[in-house]
Length: 125
Image 1 (cartoon, rainbow, N blue to C red):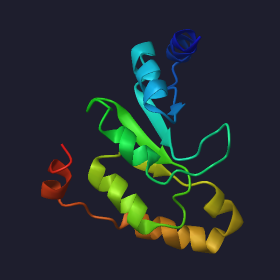
Image 2: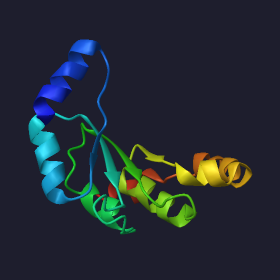
Image 3: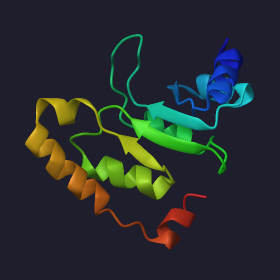
Image 4: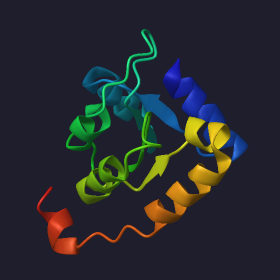
């Protein structure tokens, strides 16, 4: 079903973002032709947060794939920085922006200010 949905998005002229949580889901998405991934730290079946899930998936993602991290990132600048160093193209911040707009804006400013040393990023492979 995913390949057909990705084809429909291409025909419609939009880029599909495919959310993945596990290595198996990631592999399926890549085989289906996904080029924009959202790697989530939240288990959709249980709602449980696994803080290092997205970080663990990054090493399995080819360099030509755009990847975003999501899930429980709105309170940890250190987690966002680690994801940037690992090579994530961006992060998705959701709940924090809704529940605390002022704090959320300040957090977004801090995220935008993150500078990653290219040597540090190369260390991740």
